[in-house]
Length: 484
Image (cartoon, rainbow, N blue to C red; front, top):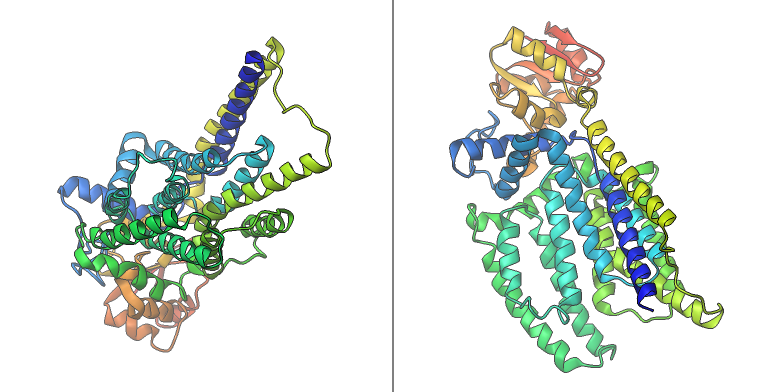
């Protein structure tokens, strides 16, 4: 009996290790996120200047204007990882954070190992496009941690309710996604109340006690957020970002399911529907509200997909586990749990599998930092030409390259970059007017004393500038540099 328990433990450990390494492989993405670069530069300046950046130092359009920097602690951490181990360490650490996020889900679920591992791996594939080297992944981890605590707090009595304001103080200095945490808590409180009204809850005395404590400590957390370098302005950040970004920036668009990389999220939603139809267990409103709420956010904007996945994955596993248990109890013959035979041959095979996956993960990391990938997405050669020519005057640049230019060409302040909340709707509209060659494009370039541009060569603006006698100083398939 003891031997069988040991074998079963070894099997669980093998599944856990293999699943973790596969998640690491799936979430290892190349350092090509446009916003990663200005986060790196921000972290570098925090280190060099020994102060937190609260005013813009990267652009000429908003130079020295107040900047709500809710990412300063993340930026410093990202730069520290980069300075110690360059891109290999940075992208490994980001992928490892994803492993920890899914280990929280793995540890809170039960059922057949195959079911848990399969669904978690599909979930990892679903969030992979958004799991890049930028502070938002820390918010994704923290939403998983908060959901874990809300689900398990009766068992985790050593972590009291004042954990909440401490969590939100840290969160508000890591990323502006703390608003997602409040939405999760509000869904929990609303669910507790409706569960009582619908008589789902059989222990309202304890549930009401939880409701009151959640309400009180959430109220405290709202003010705890103010412990940050930006003060009360931190509360404006999520709303300003949404207001400016959702209609103009691609990553904020609704998911396009014609795109293959978006489809795993669709499959997870379908699995959720199937799991609910197969399971006989009634669902609580606490789970229903958070499921509907975060799936709605994901359908509104693809950058919210990881939030929905992290919230619904344990529910999908729980439903399929319930269905499997009922099926096994009513129609299937009792069977022994699957265990790996403890013999020399199986041990060697297991070790070989783990080593093979580790080597694959190592290779994946170094494959993703290939210089050719960065050359493909950013104007590396054009910047070499610019540094050699050293043109004078202001630069008009591609939105997607703003962060890279901040990092690689700091001597030229940018026109715009990924900090949509800083630039606001007015400048973003001017940017689109220019690149699309609108009637006021030349006026805007003159207004900002633009002397040269760094853009993708297929924008309508390029043809207009040639009519105005602008000169091509550099051009390749991906980039064009023009001067007056």
